[in-house]
Image 1 (cartoon, rainbow, N blue to C red):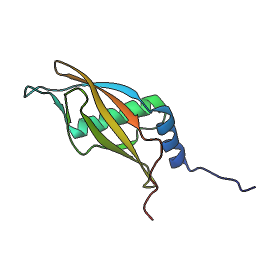
Image 2: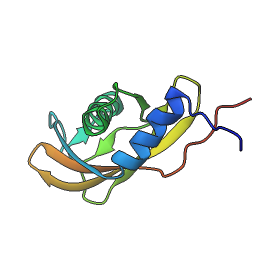
Image 3: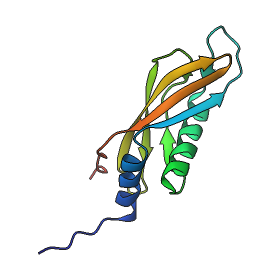
Image 4: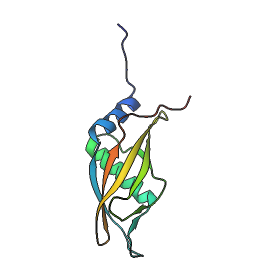
Length: 117
């Protein structure tokens, strides 16, 4: 019977997918317009911090392609990239807005995408 070994990267992605399928988050933002926005950089940092706290793993490399607009049910897709180049999609959904505070949930995909060959 063959022995299957998981790399540390695969273990990290598995931990994120299993342990952080849904994480509630919020962030303070500076209101310059009638609708608050959270910059893509701040969103990526907040998501990474929340996933790290939830899984007990090191802070993952998260990138978000766009700012998050503070309107309920607005979504954006971010990406967690592991050291070996494999990725895991992360959906961020706005659940509420209270003044300049945007509350959102984070849901990681169940299956990572392997690194390109």
